[in-house]
Each structure stands twice: as structure tokens, then as C-alpha cells.
Image (cartoon, rainbow, N blue to C red; front, side, top):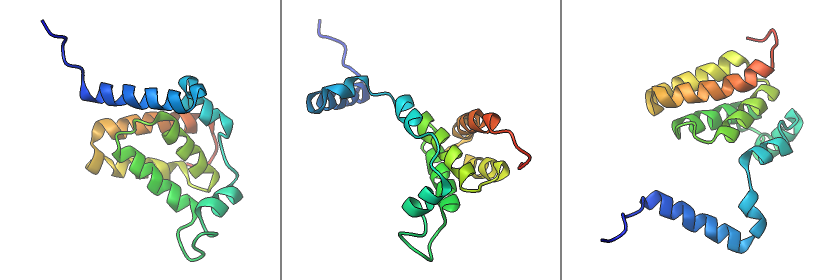
Amino acid sequence: MTDTPQNPFDLMMKQAQDMAKAMNPAMENFSPKGFEALWPTMPKEVMEMMFGNTVNKDGLDAKTRLLLTLAGLTCQGAQADAAVRQTVRHALEAGAKKQEIVETIGQMSVFAGIPAMTRALELAQEVMGDNEDEDQ
């Protein structure tokens, strides 16, 4: 009898992992959590330089860009835990209020569904729970 066909996604992931190992053997031990710990929160000025007014002086500020990024990550199913947590941390640093973060994620329930919204809120709470302040 023949082997059971493998899931195409599993095959694609295996191929990508093998390719990454061939290019850089150190990638075998890469962890998104390690990347997250590398620079957990950029200063607001750095965010403005990289994501805000330096590129487009009359464009969106870093806070707005980060809230849009959070919306996009939620729409993708909030599957990138480290990216969601980093985006929430950076949004807070850029001046977003907790309520704005919750509203941004909540609004995405219409587009991404309740499970994605719930997951994003759980990840955001991990960050906002560590960042207790009067700004609700």
C-alpha cells in the first residue's frame, strides 16, 4: 500500500525550513520569541522616523500606522503571536490608548471573525496587562 499523502501545507513548510537551513544553518534554531525579545519596544521617535513622518511628512503618524498594522494582523487570524504583541507594545509607546487598541481589534471581528478577534484580544491583553496605567 502507498503512503498516506501529506498535507500540502506541511510539505510547503518543510520545504521552506529545509531551504532556510541550507542558506543559513543557524536558522534551524530561530524563534519568533527570541526576535521579540531583541527589541521589545522601539522608542516613539524611532517609530516616527522609520514608519511615520520621515517617509511622508504629511502622511500617517506612527500610532495610526501601528493601529492599521494591528487591524491587518487581526484579519490574518492573529496567528503571528509575536507580531501582535510587538505591535501592541509599539502602539502604546506611540501614544495609542488601550481603548483604541481594543476598538481596532474589535472592529476587525466583522472582517476576520470572532475567533480571530478573540485571539488578538488575548495577545493584546498579555501586553496591556503588563502595562498598567491610568490611560484606559
